[in-house]
Length: 314
Image 1 (tube, one colour):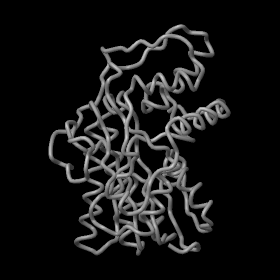
Image 2 (cartoon, one colour; image 1 turned 60 degrees about the vertical axis):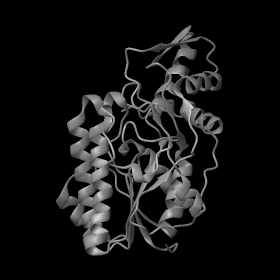
Image 3 (cartoon, one colour; image 1 turned 90 degrees about the horizontal axis):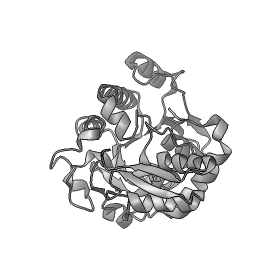
């Protein structure tokens, strides 16, 4: 992937896409192609075909997706499966038909079975039922990685699939209803401190365990894999260590300076009991993350506080 190669980052205004653009710019790539959703609706097959026919990017990072936390997935299942299937099918097919040299598809650790062995190896895909609260999104993502494999087998298209763990960082969605657990808690604790609240309520029992990766680490891994990984098999990207939601909430309280009490609302869903990725293959390939959780949350909190007026909450 030469520095003058044309690179399309689909979803550049999102959490992952924004990190990819920062990383590629920092490494001196000069021909980045981006489009906002208002300029190019990736769900529109004709529009996507026309874009690829004109731009003909050599490399594609497919980071565009409809994403959200438990509440969003549980209340809008049709939107999650429809939008993601359309985006993936259009971009993967048009990239192949217009001569892209390589495509990197970004999935999610939620593709693995709800009761998968922990840590979850890539081989456990499709070995059991999914977590019901996000199965629509997960099914769409599974279809995307299978499409990459199918296009490789039938057409020789160099499409790889990367499965990141739970992500956070600069540019995240901090909506209290529709975001993922880490940014939602960060905002909740910040606002509780600002108001002088004595209690913060946290969804669920606090016992589920989650693994978190700073999005800048993911971007670094994606560039690393785009340069040197060419296998059909999907590959996990994560830390290989996790934390309970209770421990996460306590860490958030310390970082934000909230001194009140925590209450866990067991009437709200916990989701999957544990989600920890087996990152043996990625580690063996020569990549490891660098940003520790406390450091990453601290920098994310600083970004959050300095961007309140332009906060993305939906």
